[in-house]
Image 1 (cartoon, one colour):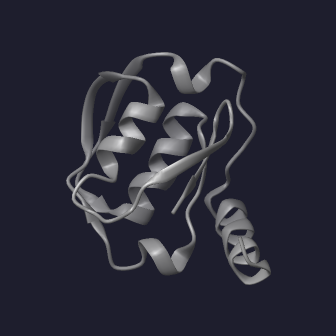
Image 2 (image 1 turned 30 degrees about the horizontal axis):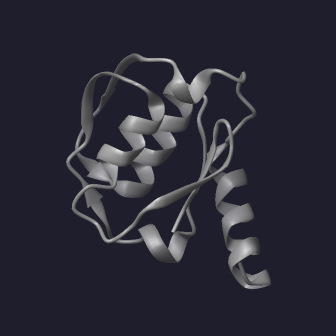
Image 3 (image 1 turned 30 degrees about the vertical axis):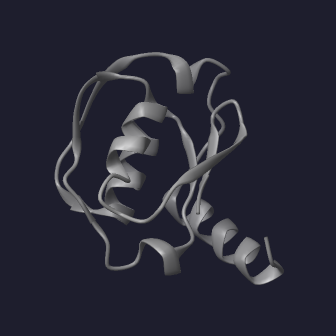
Length: 101
C-alpha cells in the first residue's frame, strides 16, 4: 500500500467512526439489515451495526451503489454481499478488520 493510499484509508476509517470490536465479532452470526444505498453508506452502517472494522479508500467506493443485505449472517458475509456487483474485494488485516481493495 502506498503512503497516499494508506493516508486515504486511514482518513476514511476515522471518518466512518470505526472502533475496535471484540475478538469474535467477524465470525458471530447476527441479523443484519442494510438497505440499498451508496456503498460508502452501507459500509458505514455495517461497521455501526456489527463492530466490524472496515477501511474503504474513498476513490474506490465513490459513486458505487449496493443492493444492501438482509439476513442472519456473519459481518464478514455481509461485507462480501455488499461488494457483490462491484469489481472490489477485501482482505483481512486482523480478526475483525478488513480493507477494501
